[in-house]
Image (cartoon, rainbow, N blue to C red; front, side, top):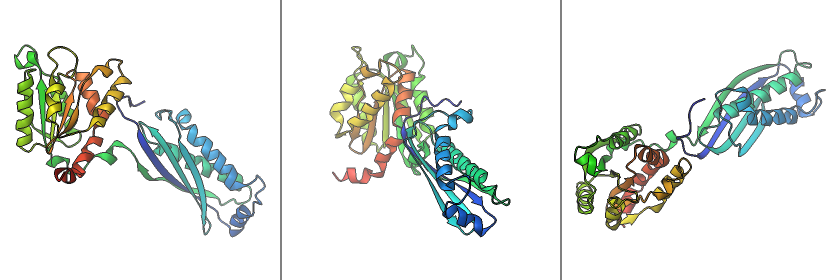
Length: 303
């Protein structure tokens, strides 16, 4: 199975359709009037389809078990064709496209089984996915390449050349997956004044997004949030609330991170943990959803 542990929950929806083709008008009339010997075709097939949706992971090896929050199966008649529409919702890390298609397939198969004694020409036609929403790609903006981004590593040992930076480069790699180009990358010591000066300089230079990595913990030299928070013209507490909650589900120490986020004038600034894992999980938790702020950036500039 594909590893989805790094994904965040979101509301995901999918609609799939299938077509059952009858060969005689009499078959359609028998369905409408509930005269098929095996029973009510619509109700029996609907029940079978609902069971199939919930059992998808039992029969499709790579499908993850997931909570089905909503499922609906509808039938409509167009001439000699019965159109099956299956809609499925979940709040989870992966989508429900296969669940919807599995439901449509089993609904159609149940109808076929019930109708074949009275219509030898019955057949199942197209089974397809009609729509899906809620995946990460739905939240990736189309103009991210226009954003000027900077990644600043706050570390005494890296700035002194004692250690190599891995965290900052990991952050840059992750940002590139969202079409974000980092045009400035640098390492500075864990110094209050230096961090503030760097943040002010980047904001004044018109950077859209600045990520400081390191110095969000509880050691005496961890001063990044203390330096950044007084500079914020508009704090966005929810960003780090989400990041800490995401991290806490993976390690019990995430609650100790003191990261802050918000705007310094027109520049969105995030403070990430210095550990590779902590920084990567923060990116996984809030991107690409955080990029929505740039859709309303013009409004923020007029406050």
